[in-house]
Amino acid sequence: MSSEWLYTIAFFAWLVGAAAFVLGLHRMNSPATARNGNLLSAGGMAVAVGATLVYLATRPGGLSGVAWAIITVGFLIGGGAGLWLARTVQMTAMPQLVSLFNAVGGGAAALVAIDDYLRISGTAEATVDTTIFVVLGAVIGCVTFSGSLVASGKLQGLISGKPIAVPGGRLVTIGLAAVTLVGLVVLVLEAASTIHLGGGLSALVLGLMVAAGLAFGVTMVLPIGGADMPVVISLLNSFTGTAAAMAGFVIANPVLIIAGALVGASGGILTKLMADAMNRSIVNIIAGGFGGGEDTVPAAAGTGGSVRSVNADDVAIELAYAANVIIVPGYGLAVAQAQHAARELAELLEERGVDVKYAIHPVAGRMPGHMNVLLAEANVPYPQLREMDEINPEFARCDVALVIGANDVTNPAARRPGSPVSGMPILDVDQAGSIVVIKRSMGRGYAGIDNELYANPKTGMLFADAKDGLGQLIAAVKAL
Image (cartoon, rainbow, N blue to C red; front, side):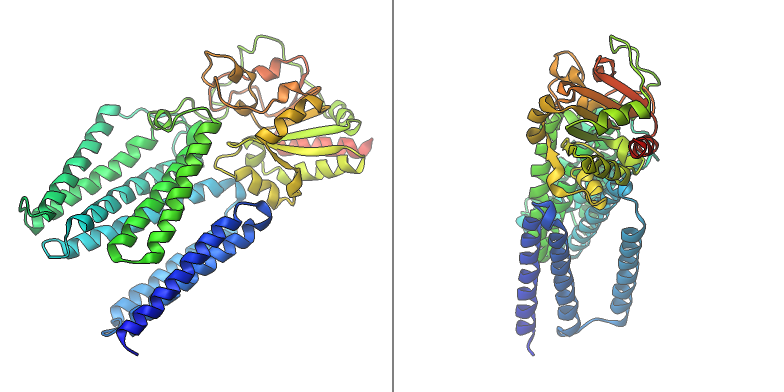
């Protein structure tokens, strides 16, 4: 079979893989079809990788023994690590894993771009458009790689979740961006034959840009606080897709272009939606977040009223004899892995004729969709999961709102100007007939301010870890 036919077959296989990506992404629009969409996308990737391997092995010249060894080791390490992580990682650690995957994707795209530039530098292939794609792919990939590692470290607790000031602040970041921009202009001018640097000097300029990109990723993410991590993850995911698309243009691979464009576009759209949900601009978030981590301030002192503590027996009576209960899960539920306990309590209440729903804020958890995934893992029925805009009108008709580990997203201070969370869309928990908050302590959330909900006369505080508190409620409801 001729090399032209082999390439044609491989090209069609790539298109099949790309089509699977598009259809898989479309099916991820609904929780009911998201699992199949994920499998469809994974199948598309398997087709694309398999077609590439067959094409490389059967084209004239084939693959050397060293190449086969490298590919085999890569498959074993990458596939083995992926399988191990998929089986062992906790759902609460999924944001960290996504950040690591972002780093791997960005780093891979950067390596492809760097290798291709070194190959074409000084040849007729080094046209202006190819040089732009190569350099942008390398820089964006490097920014994504280092930034995603820092984000993962913040989420894992290896790096403080509080904003960390970089010496020199924005001047350093501006300087790194200037180095990257000047380097891009120099390499493009060389590709246009306006100036002549030579292979060694061109590689040095690219090396400086790569170093600036890696440093920029660190200086960009370090000053961002934990409250903004969901937006940062989405933004870095968009960067990963963009870098992959650039690499696809460089090596003329349509499946990489399409997959990268899909990830870049969807990540960009999600970033905008998440920023809107926090009523903050993306530029404001990148310039530096507000606040640190959960319980970074030991006590709440400015709620403007007294806090009422309740016990599990009293709360169980409220819940069991209510007509409507809305459960508001937050990151405290995720940390305690209390999603199964929340579902068990909801089922007990439903057996007593209580109508139970879950109110999901767009930034609940530590990444987009994190809370939905946690509750789906616990087999919470999809119809009970209600997004913020849908559930907010129902709080006024709700007998009891049960808040489990959510903090800033329920703070009424967001409706009043002058607060760090002013204007942020929140769940209207304070409109419920009665409010119960399960929380370990009176510590503040990521915004670093007191939650005025806790001093509301309708609010009762059940001080406990989310899993322990729900366990107490389950036992008390069963005893009624």
